[in-house]
Length: 639
Ligand code: BGC
Image 1 (tube, rainbow, N blue to C red):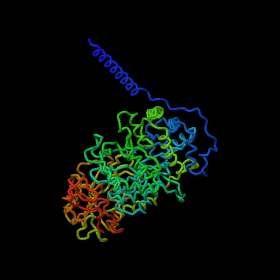
Image 2 (cartoon, rainbow, N blue to C red):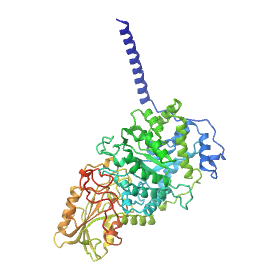
Image 3 (spheres, protein in one colour):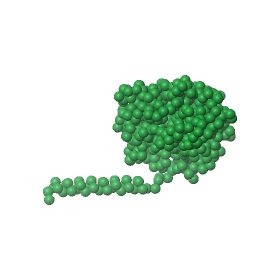
Image 4 (cartoon, rainbow, N blue to C red):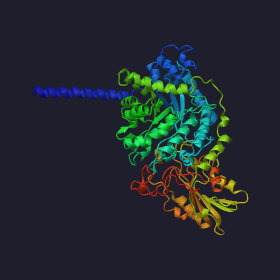
């Protein structure tokens, strides 16, 4: 055998050995028990440490605290853990010193009552205060239409309804009330508002957005941020409930069929990396929210061109922190960081270096802590980057007064209070769009005596409330305490003189027809990718209910309860009147207010209503890709 051949064998054997060793290491890493929590023997700082002094400027307090922190304590601050993984392990909050804990959708306490929530959050907060430095944690949740996680809370219209009302002052009041219910539970961090501009109505998150118009979304988003963050009594520079502008950036323009998740279709998909669209359309709402004081921004799960957003230094550091001057912190979305690479170490390194400051893990915190520690020790993540991230997180915490707030008993009576329900009803009245009104039958004449009501959403507050209500995908059914269905609202508004009959399928006895039939129809609750729908339209049972109603009523009014415009082009001519109610929430009576003329129709469409699926995605100018007009343009609404 030649020398060259021996060399080849030797090199091959060496490579083989390296590969095997690498494989063994990877295997060992994968199956190794999680590393133990970091420990420090450093003493606690004195009670009069500068960072504890509320009279000092925030930046001084941040620097003082930062200078006292170990690397592990810094990594702890950069960690956001879902509370389910802490079941029976609340002591890990102390051991790791987490910066934040969240309840993901449906992450409710076993006792899912206001008291149960308040106790759960207080328990985590106590564990955080027991850390050496006593850094309080942020407790986060999605309260995107009121604090919908707990039964009995006021459920406001989802964002698309506020987009329809197009009144920043109203959005601010709604956010303020949401903040009050949330803060009463100790939840001082809200993962809203959503500022994406939905261009494709098949997306399951259209209703979380205000509008596809950057100006409308920006004005409402900024108002929402102000409402959440304002401190009662208005202490300047202080934050009540921390707002999150999300999901940065461009997700509303994702391409159908590109989702990274095989169960989804467009959510978590690919976004064309169009810099002009970024500057002209996607960024302005974020700029407005940041100018209004938003101190956290959530990086979306999606791919900008070929780069996952959480790994994009361009988007997170250059544009957001650089061009927009954002001084708060960037939090990644649910498992978003681990979408960057199958290798969790590489994923964490890429995300932190790109500009993610806090990682929503949401579960595997021991490996994240040890990965980030190793990355810093090995020089893969600069210490200065870690310091920058922690500085941003602490800045928000100090601005929220978390270090200074005395323990207080919370007033839980604010949850679902009458004042908030009245505000929600007002918001519902303003969030309806009158699409068609043949012969001016709406509002219904005061002497309308015989009314028939049908449809899947007439007597179903779960459908009115939509997704993100108690459970991630919402709850179908009529059981949310304190909520009023649209049917109950109609009965009350029609008055005792009227005869209101109801049958979900619209099966009424033949004979004398009713003066009017009201069909309340729409979509089942859904959220996120699960709600991606190739063909959003009314289902057969609702279409049959409308047809049945038509047989036994002189006129038919259709009320649509949906999270997005449904394709109704062929149905609309058969209806006398139609209105879009979106997802109004707990106060169904607000829908009846406009139907019966107690309040006027004032809402306007916050996005164009497509004629057919073929028109999607809509262009920024509100026309279809081929230049054809939608069924109803953005801004449409009869008054
Ligand atoms: C969603 C976010 C949400 C987060 C926490 C994610 O799945 O994309 O909008 O804030 O979960 O619940």
